[in-house]
Length: 408
Image (cartoon, rainbow, N blue to C red; front, side, top):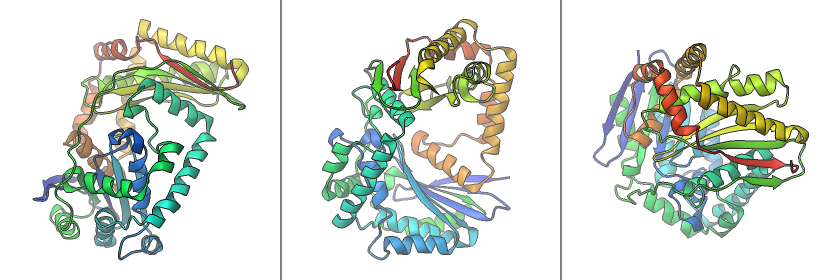
C-alpha cells in the first residue's frame, strides 16, 4: 500500500512524496506552473526554449557533466513543456535519490543561461520545428488547435514558431526565468521507497536557495472559434482532424466525456476504428481524443487516408458523430469503456515515474491529488444520464475540419 503525503514548506514550495514499498527506483519531478499559454505573443515558445536551456549547464556543472553523471547511475533525466505547465523529472535507482534531487535543484535554481547556449539551442529548436513541419499529421493537429482557440494563447504551438524563436534574445529568457520560476509556482513530487520525512529533508536542503517571490499567474478564458481550413500539400495521404471545444479540467462531466470518447474513437473496439478501418479499410490510423485545460478543452478525431478516399472518410466521421448524438451509447459499450478506463488507469500506475507524474501534474493544475480509489469510482459511476449530458454539451456543435494533403 502506498502512502501519499503533501507538505508546503515555508518558502511556498509544495512537496509531495508517495512511498512505494518494494520499488527499486525513486522518481523525482519538478512541476512549474507556467506553460505556452502564459507567454506574451511576441515571446511565443519561450517556456520551451527555457526548458531546453536548463540542460545546458550551471555554474558548477557543464551539460556533458550532467549527462554523464546521470548515465553513470543508469538514470533517466528529461523534461517537457505543455500548455499550462513545464515538467522536469529524473528517475534513478533508489540509492541515488539524493543525487537526483540535488541535480534538479541545481538546474532549476542556478541555470547558466549563457548567451552562447541560447544561440546554439535556438538552432536545435528550429530543427525541431522543421521536423514537425515534415509530419503532416502534426501540421493538421497544430492548425486545428490554432482554429479551435483562435486569437488565444491556447491556440499557439507549444514550441513557438520560427519568427518568435528567431526573435527571442538571451535577456528575454533570463527575465522569463526570474519572473516565473519561484517557490510559489513549483511542485516537487517524489515517488519510490523513500518516506516523507526523508524526502522533505532532501528537498529542503537542496532547494534552500529557491526564490520566494515572482510573477502571479493570471489567465483569460478562450472565446473566439475559427473556421475550417484546407492546406494543400504533396503527401501520400490526406490528414483529417475534426472536432470542437470540450470540457475544462475540473468539470463534473469529465469522466462521462472520457467514457464517450473511448466508445467513439478511443480504442480498438471504438466506433471510428471499427467503421473506418476494420469494416471499410479506409485508414490505418483513426482515433479520437480529448484535451482539458483550466478553463476549456478540446475534442478531436483524426484519420489519415488516401486522397481519393478523403471525402468519404469525412462523411463517415460526420455520420458517426450524428449517430452518437442521436443514439447515445449501448449498455455494452458503456461497460467496455468503464472497464478499459479503470483498468488502464490502474495498470498505468505500476511504476514510480507514473505515480510521481500523476501527483505532480494534479497538484500544479488542481492544487490537490484525487485519491486513486475515488478516481476509479468516478468512472465506475458514469451512467447513461451522464453520458447523454456529456454528448449534448460537447458533440452537438458544428465541428471544425482541417485537412492537410492533396486538395479533396
